[in-house]
Length: 300
Image: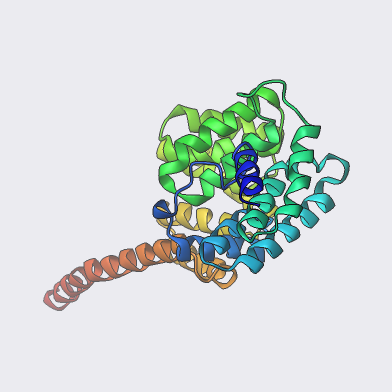
């Protein structure tokens, strides 16, 4: 049994899985990250639960971790139907590791057979779906992982340059890390492929404002709100845009709406705090001016 376990462990190390990627528990804020990923699942923001399963395992909630992976598999099959298997390579790898950790060695086999079914022909090249899954994991888990996310999405795009998901992932990762042209170029590229992505539209609008391209930015914001008016990520980016443009009250109203859908979002709370700070500053600045006007009126 010990020999079997050792051999199995060696095979598991060769699987593509969040358990074999360079994700360390010490790097992760488990509670905060769990809250964000659960929020994404609840709001159906493209999160199928596989990433959260690793956190549940680290929190010693193994049954919930397995349930999340099963849920992820079900949603992936519903979404991608006959194209789902390669997108399940990482999910099956995670499931194999969880089964191994709980001593259920017999249920690790499906992961090996699935990865064997789709060889890449090279030990150093992965399927684009695996690069993509890895990219999203790095992007969602920690800011210091963003460069790794960019690298993964770029490798996925080398294999599938027209894929809307990999283009969007790369654009978002660059938006968060690159203040200059790479993010601009990739956002425009992603929107060429999927022009109705409200999140990307609002992100590009914020980039345009920084370069004083206000007319184009305004058009993108209007389009984003028309396409996805209730998407909390659209609302939060547009809320930031409105604050920057001096529309503080409109920003507060929109961010409050976003908060109703995503109550624990640190981003939205931060943007609201900045709005209220600006509002208080404006009121304090206005008071001396009002007093001065009153005094002048009396003298006249």
